[in-house]
Image (cartoon, rainbow, N blue to C red; front, side):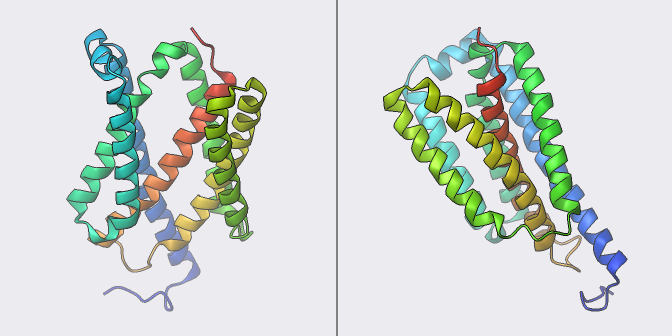
Length: 233
């Protein structure tokens, strides 16, 4: 018989939160693994690279599909079946890997690897902070969201301006924002877990939703760091 949240001890609550976060990280790792595999697989094939990037319409279609999938999953995951939520998450991760394959053309493999390691270390440290800190990070949310909107607008403007200085500012600001979001989102995901819900379909879908959030924080932090650290071919 499941205990209600009110009757669970502090240790039991902490253990349940730890169990849930392990599931979130496992789903996130699976998504990153698929993304990395698809990026390497596509980039190693001249035929696939020609198919994907030989026609300028294909990358646009892929990006639009990614945006549609991520918004659909984020907003509807709890109404989906577990198999559907899993499929959409994995499809999104795979499509991201296909578009990321271009990074192996633009940057050296060594700089991509080193940037990934820096990203993993930074993400791990900030996620650990968000998980363990007693400080309420709720107040960070609105500030980080405004910053995120700001760098999106600045990035669109810089498409036309082509300013190297603005590019650098956006990259540094992006790193700071996604570092902050990693801690903020980790704490939010930890607290959103419904106690007594373990082992249910809802528990799995909550874990997928949390994994998607942290997956997005990770890949965006990686991209921002790559713009600063990556060695171009």
